[in-house]
Amino acid sequence: MICTVTFNPAVDLVVDIAEIKPGEVNRLSGEQVFFGGKGINVSLVLNELGIPTKALGFRAGFTGAAIEQYLREKGVVTDMIELPAGFSRINVKIRSEKETELNGSGPDIDENALAKLFSRLGELSAGDTLVLAGSVPKSVPADIYEQILRAVSGRGVRTAVDACGELLMNVLEYKPFVVKPNIHELGELFGKELRSADEAAVYAAKLRGLGAVNVLVSMGGDGALLIDGNGEEHRCGVCRGTLRNSVGAGDSMLAGFLAGCESGDYGYALKLGTAAGGATAFSDGLGSKETIDRLFAEL
Figure 1 (cartoon, rainbow, N blue to C red):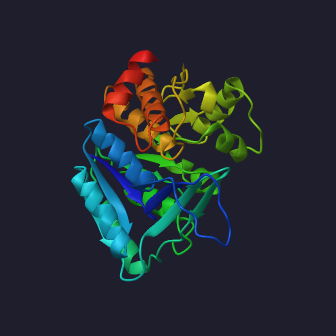
Figure 2: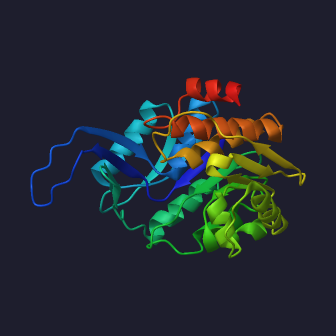
């Protein structure tokens, strides 16, 4: 079972408008609603690929109830902790002359709720995978990822971390199975501006040397690369298609990689991850299995 944790899930409202006129009533030309958060996105794509998954995390209010209902309708097993106050955040993306995002802050997560999360994590056993993805709310301790990896350490649980900065660097001592920075985040970790796949490979290897078992790096138009658990380098080109959506593409890549790892073939896992990321980038929401399979065949 692959379990994901989403500390701050969201209802995303994406609206289209030709021109915003401040101080006036503005009529939208289109609107869509999506339910997500990085960990939830990973679970949804894993579910699409037929991989057993459970979405853990926190929800609150009417928006939180809607998020969990949506996951269940999609067939994703959930065990989210309901918070006593507030509501899960609403993010608004305005697509106009320039793209503008308005992101909510989300509810506070108290110590009692965190204790419930750790209780659920205590149910993980050898062979399970735990995915920690994204930033964490201000109400949560800054070292929460470290606390979680420490809690599951030594139990045979594989861990995947998709985060940046200190949130990522501070968990490397626990030897996560895979970390997934993009090329810009990878450079920032070492105070460098990386401009090529060759440069990214050098610093991905350094990140592996600090403790990560696999380092998966998304590089936009340059595709993706992997320094695998054997220290070998793999590269995969970019999928061909029209960009429609940047939200969730990295999460989809991680989901595809984890699904591919079930085969034991790292090259295959990188290719499936690339196809899954591309499928989401070329869709309005998360990529479907049909689109993932088509892109995989084209790579």
